[in-house]
Image 1 (cartoon, rainbow, N blue to C red):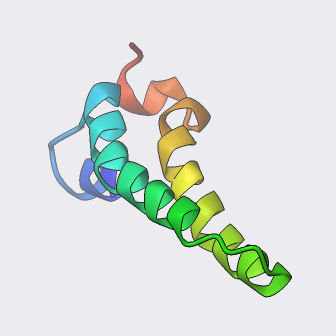
Image 2 (spheres, rainbow, N blue to C red):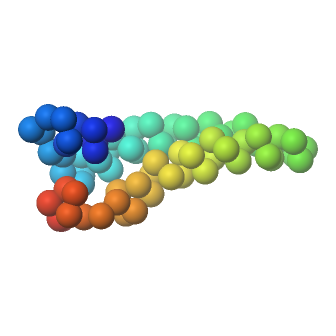
Image 3 (cartoon, rainbow, N blue to C red):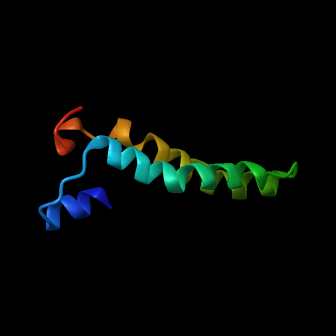
Length: 72
């Protein structure tokens, strides 16, 4: 979302804004994925998808190149 906004508007968010925006959705989603884990193998496979997707949201600011956001 931040890349879309930076490309098509004059607003360029800093890295802190991206961390907060990702955390707003990532933390509750990660907690919900952890809460949904059941002991059966099928549930473990199904909950790995949202677990890793939300973990990716939280790790996004460290994965993106810093030059996109003007450095820290």
